[in-house]
Length: 227
Image 1 (cartoon, helix red, strand yellow):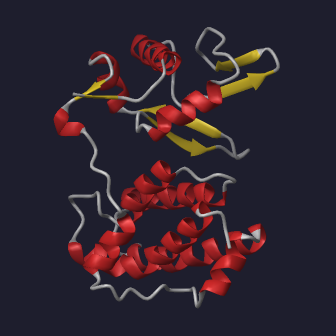
Image 2 (cartoon, helix red, strand yellow):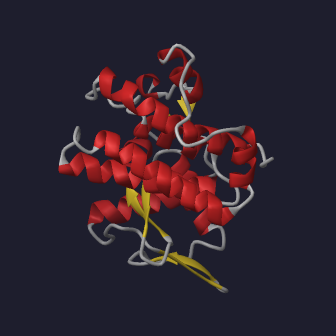
């Protein structure tokens, strides 16, 4: 029987959020506010201590909260159905919902016969330079994003395209962060490669692989600590 790997404080935080949402006293998005005296969530009574932002990040990595960035570049959160289920089940994960760890890079190589050409990246030297130059990295990620979006935009509905763009933006933010989270990257790569979407076609997944692969290379190099 699997359980969520959360601290007591994180479980209590999620319980409070879910209870406030169900009662209608809290609304999405959840906006955390930090100060010298502690941290709080707008619309939810109580002081959640100085670790609130870290706890929200852990809940997000556990796929219990969703997030996006506001105009200031700060994360704001939404509550996923999995959060309600987790609280109802006392944080025990049903066997049918235990996630399988996926090596996205290996899957891409296998599906493409091991011959994926990394679009937009010529050699290891360029890769090392990218991860060690924040301005260059930002420019390259934007360039790769344009190429990837060009491949999928005619295949997705307006709603699906907006969701896809949001996933790419979250991926870019995570890659550019000082310490990217492997679990967050894992979920985002599964999303933009359509490997986790049962409604997508294999042909679409295959077409995006060469454009997803350079993101994978950059993320792997960043996780390894650069060149």
